[in-house]
Image (tube, protein in one colour):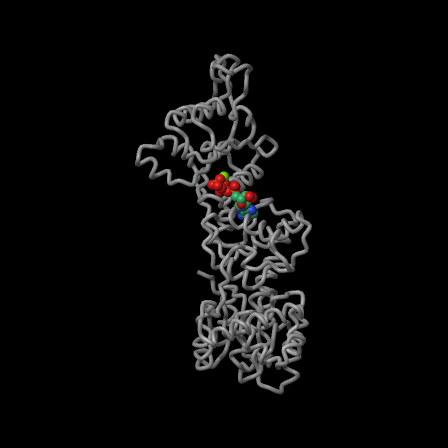
Length: 464
Ligand SMILES: Nc1ncnc2c1ncn2[C@@H]1O[C@H](COP(=O)(O)OP(=O)(O)OP(=O)(O)O)[C@@H](O)[C@H]1O
Ligand SMILES: [Mg+2]
């Protein structure tokens, strides 16, 4: 499911709002307001990326046009919001005032739905780009969670947990599907803790056979078993003063669980074949992608160990639940891999963005990272396409269509796409090349879901 952007309709005429709702309900989460107070309260609460504002609202008691006041106050609250102003034709002075106040675009009444839809699509695309680049900037400006990217609400909740848990010294259990970033979260907790100067030692309990895991965790003395030719410290001991991260704890055998529990009770280990008791000061973090409660019910996991481990539980959302983070992460990975591969890539095509949002991401962030890594190598042009990502193209034109009309649509779409690409997204140039007017090209772009803002660098130019 693709997340729909929120759009606030501000108009004092209820009939106009109702008409707009009918026209736009399928693509946007609509909010509405009839006056300035209601509009600003909606903006405070929902921070919609888009506002469609009737500039013709009656002037307020101080004689200031209400529409302009709403526009200015909206942008003061969040300068990234795209306010599209609707006004009577011919009022040049008002149009200039609106542009000077920061309106994203101006549409004259009667509003043409096709044009409005294209303007809204481009505004959404630009808003997302700007928001993401701001988040990337925040990150590169040295965020506290080095390497952990996310601006969605579910990830903000995770960051809040990390902040609170990080400063304490209690054990925490990180739960989430494979590839959601559990280890990164564990590292972030370590870095925020008083143990950050100490070691962070991770061990994957699922990847090591039971017999080896015991000696790996607790260490051994020379001669403890055949092959133990010299003394070796265990992982627990080597985390002295730091954090021990037990990954895939759900895969640990029942007998080892008993030994781990004993360690958690007294924080003492003794190496296999050894006599000395060694005190170890570590903070324990564990992670799992299995339902431990179910494992307890089926007798595979000890309940007492579970309660020791999960003093605090941190659930990590799946990638699909993170909405806008999908493209934020995709762009972050694109920038990273393009740099390491020395490729000049400007971003994703709008179709690729749609495909990213439509995909289910069973492998979560790891899958996204791998797809982008591959795409950076495979991309032929400056933009990554759905094919580069090995994702289905979510084309609004039915590519399986066998009708004459369907075939013509497909052909037309491909031609418009190619010419737009050649013209670097400049609509006027592309229209001349195709031998059609700009409004007709607008309509085609909208119908085929191509979006004129495919080439963000030329946005302003193509709007001119
Ligand atoms: N929020 C994030 N921001 C940036 N990179 C991330 C994020 N989450 C995960 N990654 C990257 O995704 C990959 C998988 O992350 P990680 O190994 O932490 O997941 P995991 O939940 O421990 O997976 P598994 O259950 O398979 O062990 C890593 O390369 C990691 O750097
Ligand atoms: Mg892991």
